[in-house]
Structures are given as structure tokens and as C-alpha cells.
Amino acid sequence: MRRRVTKAIFPVAGLGTRFLPATKSVPKEIMTLVDRPLIQYAIDEARAAGIKEFIFVTSRGKSALEDYFDHNPVLEQELRKKGKDGLLETLKATDMESGAIAYIRQHKALGLGHAVWCARRLIANEPFAVMLPDDVIAAEQPCLKQMVEAYEEIGEGNMVAAMEVAPEKTSSYGVLDVKEDMGSVVQVRGMVEKPDADKAPSNLAVIGRYILTPSVLRNLNKMKSGAGGEIQLTDAIAQDIENDRPAYGYRFRGERFDCGSKAGFLQATVAFGLARDDLRNDLANYLESVVQMSKAAE
Ligand code: G1P
Image (cartoon, rainbow, N blue to C red; front, side, top):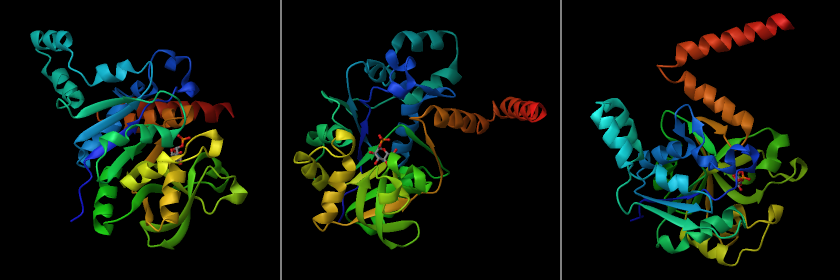
């Protein structure tokens, strides 16, 4: 029987230069959507999908991430003393079972493929997930859970989350060469990292959720740098296809926000704010007044 997906790798070593100066001292993954850091959204999604072990690939300057998933006895004691049970409850989301979380350093910024490869010794002979916290996905059923269910049905190969993007945007994504389109699942003939629009095999792009087999890690042992001079995860998955191992794209149900960009981050802030009972009215009224004012100014 196929092994369940219980481990997830979170590549969080990036410098976050697009958000400087904020990211000079705050890791990008700690930046906040409403009142929860980006990484919390990824961890919640992973947990909902049955992930039990969380592997962070970090770099210098990311200690705030480690502290975030640690207990803070002084804060907890203070909240308990003041009877702030609601706040104590919200802290529970940051609780990690001892030993469930591991940190590996990526010593050189050599690309996403290299970051994932850095975690290779923590992955045994089992399929594992990779989650990019920049991609925040609002969905009724968490995206990774949808994928795990689809993967268990297919029972083989590698799977990536996929979404149609505007054809002129392919150079920002891994792009799928579709062999057979079965609706929510597509079988893939090849994958290209960040192709120019005129060279892209389709406009079906890879979004930052993967379920991979250890053969991808073996491919990464030998992988040379690809697009942007970096070692690419896309290339290691494409190599698996060339070695006759199947790969699938999964069109998830949900809305994806690119929180690696400022505009995407702001959109996510609005969307998650509007989804909250305690904020919806105030925020909606404000947005409405802004729209009216800008219409009046036209
Ligand atoms: C990474 C991957 C790319 C994927 C994208 C999704 O690129 O390399 O294949 O489409 O994430 O967000 P990055 O955005 O880190 O440059």
C-alpha cells in the first residue's frame, strides 16, 4: 500500500528583498496577514492535510521563525494572570509537538531545488509535501488536503498544484506541458521553469504546493543550475518525467494570493480581512467609501 504524506518541507531561506526595508530584520514569512504571519497559514493548511512533521529550510536572520513556534512562558503567564483565555487560545495555533519541527540551514542561496535538497536526509522512502508560504490559498477545503486526496487516488508519481495564468505571465512560473487533461487532474509531459510567453508550452502554471517522491531528491543530487542561474525544483521534477515517472498537475479549488508581491499581499490582506466576522463591516464600509471617492474624482 502507498505510504501517506506526513512530512512537509517549507523553504523559508529567501531574503525577501521585495519587501525591504521591512525584511531587513523581520523574516518575510513572519509578515502578517490580518493578525497571523504568512507561515501560520501554511502550517494550518499542512496540518489540515495530515502533515505531522514540519521541516523548515532556513537561513541566517530567521530566528524569529523559530521563536514563533516556541513557547513564550513570560507572555503565557501574563495572559493567564490577567484571565485572557481567548488570547491564550489563539496562541495554541503556534504549538508544535516536541520533535515535530526541524530546521535545516541552506548555507548558500542556490535556488528552490537546492533548498529542498538540503532537507533530503530527513525524508525517508516516502512521498512528501513542499509548501511555499508566499503562495497563500483561500479555500473551503485547504489546497494541500485536496491534493493529498487526489494523490491517494492516483497513487503514484509527483503532483504539483496548478492554475491557469495570463499567457504573458508565464515567465514568473513553472509551466506545465499537458499530456492529458482530465479536468481537475492533468497528466504532464514536461515542465519548464519561467519560460517566455512565446516559448511556454501552456499557460497552466505551477503554484507552490507539491507532493513529491524521493526520486526528485535523487535528481537534485546531480542537478545543474537552470533558469535564473538557480537549481530549480521544476527541472528535477521534469527529469523524473524523462525517467518515465508520471507527474500530474492538480487544479485546486480556491483563490491563490501571491504574497511574494506587494500587490498580492495587499489583496490577501483585504480578502482575509473581509472573511473575518470581527472586521468585515468596518473594512467593507471603508473600501466602499474609497471606491466612491475615487469615482467622484474621475
Ligand atoms: C517558484 C517556482 C515556480 C512556481 C512558483 C509558484 O518560483 O520555482 O516554478 O511556479 O514558485 O509561486 P518563485 O516564485 O519562487 O520564483
